[in-house]
Length: 109
Image: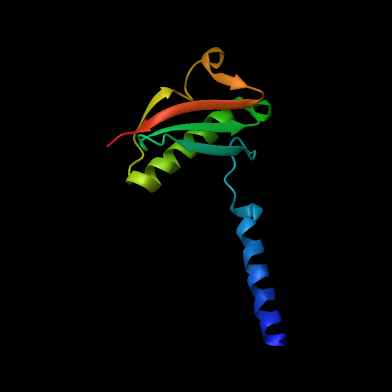
């Protein structure tokens, strides 16, 4: 019984290391929450959100680009993206609602 408790404790400590802040990617020196939503009909199309924009617009742009690029590399092995709503757009043209930047793209074959 003690052996099982010990093994569970070791596993728990190992899992806690998975959220190690030193392994997080920072943008403009800050942490952003990024999320990628995939189109169910055509998995090459995606929508990415990054927040909070109020921390840094440039950081949010880079976080969104990182999420999209990471998705395309993981899924298709390439980082090429055709942006529909680009993170490079003028600040006034960006889709920012409730402190969340939303961009959309398509992984290129």
